[in-house]
Length: 425
Image 1 (tube, rainbow, N blue to C red):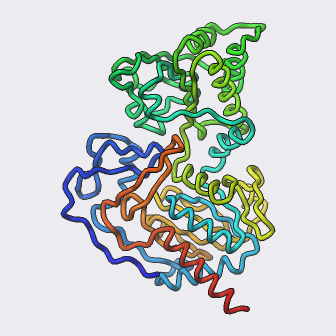
Image 2: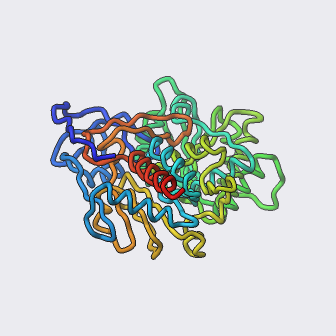
């Protein structure tokens, strides 16, 4: 494959519609204006603004590098294929890409027996393990907007990391009045400004583990040795609400956070015996939900799965990137970071292949092959799963840049590996 010919859409109107790829909410209700760099219209979302600061209104450009030295695309692909061919156990990590990119990476993993883990794998596993062990009852952004009369933000104020959450879920015109309770988090300043919304803030009863356990016990009607007036009042509100949504953030949970996720589902299940309730998990950024969904539909197993020649092996703890690197359980790493340069590869002396945002070019080092890739939703089209799981949104580029996508590069490496194996027979 060769790099694509640039075709900037310079005649596109100012304030073009745009779907943001930089957050799992995948907001599509605001626009981008042309400026010295792409600028948000109708939103001041700090997360999107920070991500857009890494892009200019002109086409992205970067040079592939081998051991820090400039190289052409074909040579870089050959060097990357050589690293994977020599590896007995490669790790594909980062995995910040779109649907097409992850599909191509899974095919490449099949060809070289790689282990798959996302950069935010620890947070993803909290919700994934709860799903595996107990099952889950999740809702959607639209359901919250149209039906929820009680929203309980447990250990998060939502908007610190997902600034548009309360705007996206603001009550619809015919929705019931809503009460938002922040448990163990400062109340979001934007929530009280929404029409028909009242806000309350209460503390944790100990830590987050203690709090969810107490809520679950009290909702189930168990007698307790001591009482917590604030939690008792919350329990009464939850039992009296028509539709309660428990919002939690997987990335904010401590170690063993899957226990919190499971208890939240127990709370939801208890409420659904007499009223209606669901959970909403904030997480899956940097393409995390997308990587997990694609891996699951292609293999039947979620991330932290090894696509070994002897078969698939899922190890949610042992196959964590940090664990594998610390124990030298892998001998090569392919790192994918197509959205922002902040998601840099881990420090390692292992042979490293980086398919990355052009901003990662400056960080290339010895024993590394760097191949710049296009960002879906900026320089190329793509698709991402939204935070509520069942919605896939298309991403339209603001220009067509000269860089290949992750799917293109992964396909090139796979073809090179196949050709090398065929020649060796």
